Image (cartoon, rainbow, N blue to C red; front, side):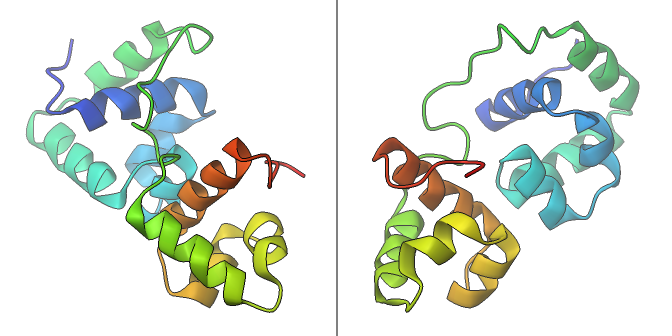
Length: 141
């Protein structure tokens, strides 16, 4: 079993079990894409890649992820990028001033919204999570 270097690593393991081809995304995808797909900060992706390279842990990671049942995995509240952060609140405020406002934030591609407001796509996911909890935005709608 891999020694988890942080709580974020534990959350990433849970996401790897939930996301199809999660370990391949972690290993091979562009840093920002992997962060958005796995719903963690890019720093977590970068640190995890460096850690796994240093300890030659990719095979151990595959075995560990394969052993996780994604149906029973629970992630601590706020561990993924759904928590209401200062960045998410600032994005919500900025969206309120935008001509398309919440429609743009909820409906358009995360990368497009991020470019519009000058934030990272993970901030878009956090803001959407806040709106979803407030029943103002539905994922997949």
